[in-house]
Length: 422
Image 1 (tube, rainbow, N blue to C red):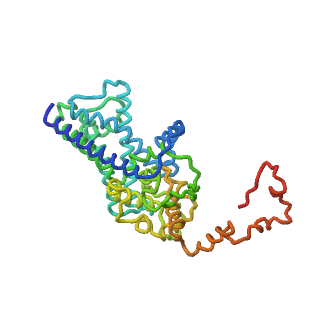
Image 2 (cartoon, helix red, strand yellow):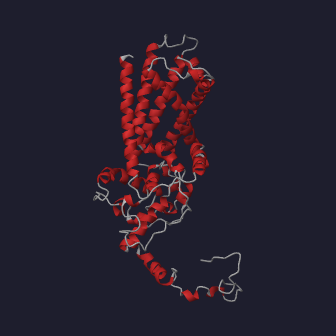
């Protein structure tokens, strides 16, 4: 084993230590949430993971998702080559060629998929920097974060093609063969001919790969690690339904969500799984009528708040935080702008419940502080006294049906269907 092999081995160990340490920290942040995540209906979860996750059916509901799907699939296909390259960097001469036909098949898939990923990345950069749809608007650092990831993937694929040009792999390789014909022509090939360039590109490939590994859990692309678990751990849920509170629980110190740790563990996993695609924002009627609410930013703000305060909360879950969830993180005008239409949850490709995150804070404001907009005071008072927001006397609720020949349950309880009119 040469000095270079030892150095690469140490870098691999260091990168994995940093990666694992960060992942463990994120898992601990999520564990600050309430309750547990039930693991029933495993077959249904596996189906969701395959159909919604690996097949990207939710992402593919709109044209922009096609590029993302190819990047996602390419990530898994290219992992095969990346692992081989890392091992070969430590154990000279290592190869997966012993796998025979599977190796040939994977080499062919890598050659084609890498080209499709490059095209998808180019389209993604064009959309973000040239077309600039509103839903992709982000701060300078968030934009740079995305471009760094694109740059790392591009360098990784470029290094792979450079190695394939000088040292061909078995199988059908139309892209590598075309590039080789353009750059080298009929010249000699192999590691003996291009020993130094091959060594350089192998180091570039491995260093970029390790940089990618370290950077992902600290970047906006954290969803590469959290989106699939979020889909697998999905909970039985009817969109728009609020979780029932036990208002008779005398031991409860608070109701609703007052602090980020009042969210469930699944809720905190959801905010960490956000892809920042902006589909929720694009569909939000509040955002589209110039209200200050954007569901995407709500999720990102809660995630940033969790990650900023997480280290302190791990030491002391009851610690006084530098920012409060309300109104520092989620402002009043943002909280009450939501129309609870559920459009955001309907279109989310990783099934995040954006609206429900806001409703939890609303519950806390109303039940614990009596804090709600003046416009809602009359309606809530009417609900409390008459069980309806219009202050209609309860004995007059059925008055509208007089003379229409509509039976009530009081007149005939033996019915097959009940027409619920509100």
